[in-house]
Amino acid sequence: MFRPAKTESMIKINELGFSYGQVRVLDNITLSLENGKIYGLLGENGVGKTTLLSLLCGLKKAQSGTIFIDGKNPFNRESSLLSDIYYLSDECAPMNMRARTYAENYGKFWEKFELAKFKEIMELLEVSVEQQMNKMSLGQLKKVYISFALATNARYILMDEPTNGLDIPSKAQFRKAVTKYTWDDTCIVISTHQARDLENIIDPIIILDKKEVLLNASLEEISSKLFFYYGSDPLENALYCEMIPGGNIQVSLNQSGEESKVNIEALFNTVHKHKELVKSIFSK
Image (cartoon, rainbow, N blue to C red; front, side, top):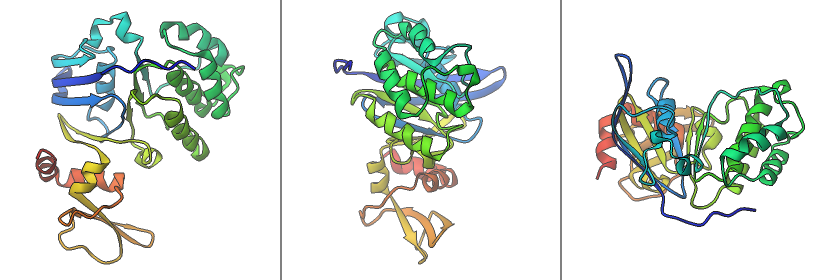
């Protein structure tokens, strides 16, 4: 199986801005994304998650600010960079061909694509490579494109809501495929509303708000600054509290240094309830 040589790679976004007509979607967005990590990109509808992914893969042009991937502007469409980026859209086209034929035809655009790897991932996801794509269910079609994305061996894989349309067993298969079939220097960005589907694989967490980044931090950093308490006893000065089976999940400032398991949904709600406080905590 192909194994790419390790190189220093990074996405750098500086004061990025983008509008649809008079509607400003992204404004002054600054981020650095490192290789070897699986980023979870979270945010409410309309905050620009899909737009950001489209800008990263070069489908849209930044109207202000800059995006550089390995020092190159993705909108310049340099073949050497494009062959190292794969964007998995939330919308999957039901092509009138077999999955194997699709992979054979379109894999040529990614110089490190492996047909054998595509077939292996398809087998893991329990979809036949001989099946017609336009006769597949949404979940089966999603698996074809997930398999293709991972088989490109692209250094940057951008996924927009990849678990939409997948049933519960398939979501487990997806998590296994992502962790098993990507390299330790691959940069993956997964935009999702289904935080629970990806809770065990995404780290760091990016929370995007209208026109700003509220959070970009690793789970270790989040746990060091916020405490997640699971129980029935109320926490003094809790920032967020939600009823769960058996008690509550509460979030407070971590003033004791005690470790806790980060609950991503509770984190998201805490950040949105205390935007300025959270930004000040994580900017230190």
